[in-house]
Image 1: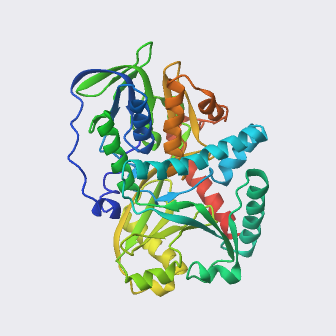
Image 2: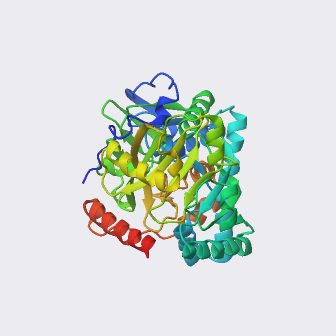
Image 3: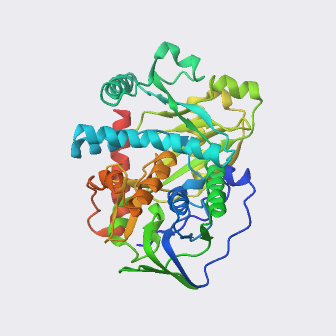
Length: 433
């Protein structure tokens, strides 16, 4: 089953409304040769292209829509270390403790890399440090406290514990039973960052072609990627299509079937007075709750509340999702009942079955990066660096992640929506138990 591109879902994005995009890059026409061809103009593809051109390779990047059209340009804006609880457990179950720690440290290097690139390329993307995880019940608070202690003991990364009585010092909500504060993580405007990264890549010499969907991938000693109007011959190819790779049948069915494309949604309120916004988040940290079917929320630079969640197995109209999200928002912040919703949007993100990153090889000269599972802002950047190191002859850090096993859904992509819906229903039930 082909994955339909979510053009309509993304049309009322607050992020798109708050930027001026540069002129569209031309579509590929004719034959082009290069050292490396990157498929996908999201953060993983842009990071890969930038890292490679800085190492002296000639690089062509092909994007089927526009740069940062997918999750890279419309996500929650959370720059978070680690891989999520499920991802960390999968890594720990498969790798020795010292390698699991190396993988964790690499994820933290991803946070540092984003901030380094903001400084180096002068990308103004409204970055604010600080990230809260908030427990929705006493049971969840106990689990979160245990995980906090575990991170301190095994990873040397102790987030600050916040008791229930202290939650009001961080966020103006009575819903939560405890939480943690991570000063190393933070939040930013993802589209501003992605467009800044694209400009840095173009300035460094990357050839970016938009509206250039790849229709055929021919493997061999010199891979060839074809579009409707042109083709690229290269020495290496890197696939970073993520949730959208399955939209193009036959390109890489083996790895496309290992990704669950989850539709997720966001709303943005009308802007508030600064004092009112500051009263919601006393330190303006971003936040998520501890449920599987989680809410995530933060303040924008122009004092709006950005609130996301309401994941679905199949896409729905963003306006329909907005009704559900507004109800969730008011459960957390009932004091915002007189504040209107100005934007509602959504789209697919890529999630692996075990929520750990899925990096690997298809032969000797085709590589892929996918499965960022909600931690893409930081992990995509460092993933691009790892695959650039691999192409340059340093495979150790990339191969650390290739040792993590991933599984495809039996029956291929056709079964993904019903199986995903069933799994999401099961975990939502656990949220209530």
